[in-house]
Length: 580
Ligand code: PEP
Ligand code: MG
Figure 1 (cartoon, rainbow, N blue to C red):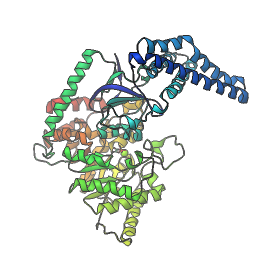
Figure 2 (cartoon, rainbow, N blue to C red; figure 1 turned 90 degrees about the horizontal axis):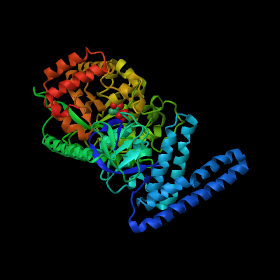
Figure 3 (cartoon, protein in one colour; figure 1 turned 30 degrees about the vertical axis):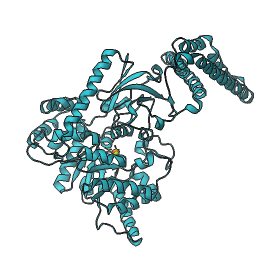
Figure 4 (spheres, rainbow, N blue to C red; figure 1 turned 90 degrees about the vertical axis):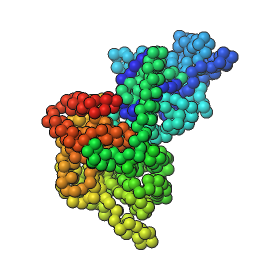
C-alpha cells in the first residue's frame, strides 16, 4: 500500500481499478491473462521487443549517417537497454510466472527501472528515466497497436491516473465509467478541477510523481475529500473507505430532502442559491439538486469538448436547451472565457510566458470579433426564450466593458434588422475577478446591472499565485485577509449602490466560508450543482446576526491560517458533519 498526498479538488471517494493514461491520452490496459494464454503472451512480448529493436536499429543507422556516430549513440544506448537480458528476463518472468499481460509486465518493469533513475541525485542520470519511458511507450505502441483506446472510450468502471489532464480532456471523461481521477500536476482551482466537480467525479491533483509505481489493473482509492490517493490499499483501508462511500451516499440521501426548500436563514432571509454549469446537460443536476437558477454558465466549454469550431446554431441550440430547461429560473451566461488553461482548437496564439496574464477571456474575445459575434448573436437570440443575464469575464478596465457592451448592442441591432424579435433590455454584468475591477468598482457599478465575484481568479490575481500550480497551492487561499478585504469592499459597495452581487467562485462551495460571506452582506451565491444541497443546508442552519458576528471577528484576523481555523471551529458548532 502506498499513500500519496495531493490537493483535493472534487469531493467524494472512488475505489476501483486503475487505467493509466500516457502522455498522449491513451490508456495502458489490463493486468492478467488466463493460464492458457501465457505462451502466446510471451510471444507477443518478444515480437514487440524485436520490432521496437528493429525500429531503433533503423534510426541508429539513419541518424549516424546523417549527423554522425555521436548522435547515433543515443539509439545504441536504447538498443542496449532493450536487449539487456536482466530486463527481458524480468518481463518474461512476470508473464510466464505471474500470468501478467505483456502490457502490464512491460509497463511495470520499465517504470521500475525509470523510477530508480529518477531518484538519483545526479541530474544527468535522473534524466535517463525518460529513456525508459520512451521505450515503454514504443513497446506499448507495438503491443496495443489498434487496441489503443483514447480517454473518451473508457467504457468499464475505472479510475484514471495521468500526469496531467487538460480541461478539454477532462470534459471528455464519461462519469458513468470514470469513477475518479488523480493527476501528478495541477492546482486547487484549475479548470480541470472545476470540470471534475461539474461531472461529480472525485478527484485529486498535484500529487507529484507516482505513475511509475502503478500499472493498469492495480486497485486504487481516490479520496477527493482529503486529497489522498491510496495505491494498492490493504484490506483494512479498503474496508474503511467502503464504509465512507456508504456514508457519502446516506448524507446525499439526507440532503436530497432539501430540494424543494428555499435557501433561507433561520431568521428568514432568503439567499439566492444558483448553480454553476459547464455543459448544457448539467441542467438536470441543477433541477434535481434544487438550485434557484444558473448563476454561472461557463459557455467556453462548448469549444473544449470538440475539435470543430461551434457555429451560431450550435451555440443557440445549447443555450436554448439550458434556458428552456430552467423554465422561469434565471440563467447567467458568461461569454467566452477561453485562453490560459482553457485552450480549445482555436484560436491559436503565440506561446505565452504567462498565459493567465495574457490574451485570455474578454481580451481574447475582443481580439477575435468574428468568434465573439457568433456567440453574441446566438446568446441574444436565445435570450428571448427566458430570464437571461449576460456577463463578461475578466474585466480589468472600464474600456473593456464599454467595448463589449457596444458589441452586444451592435449585435442586437443587426438581429433586429434580420427580423428577430428580441427582449427590450438584456441585463448586463461583469465578473469581478481582477483587483483593478474592485479598485474601480464605484465606476463599474454605474454601468452594469449586476456583478459576480469570481474568487478563483481574484485569489490568483490578488496574491500572485497561479491557480493551477501545485507548488504554490499552499499560498492559494480564499481566507487570506487581503482576499477577504477585496470581497468585503465589493459586497459593501454593491449593496450600497443597490446593484445585485453574486459570488460564483469555488469559495462558496466550502461550507465554512458561507457564514462569513453571509455576514459580509452577500445574499446570492452559485456553486457546482453537487454542492447545492450542502450549501443550502448551511444557509438554513444560521442566522444573519450570528453570521455578522463571525464576519466581524474574521475581519480582525491577520492570517489565512487563523481565519481557516476560526471558521472551521464555527462550522463545527453549527453543523458538525460538514466541518472538514
Ligand atoms: C472565477 O474565476 O472565480 C470563476 C468563477 O471563473 P473561472 O473559474 O471559470 O475562471
Ligand atoms: Mg475566472
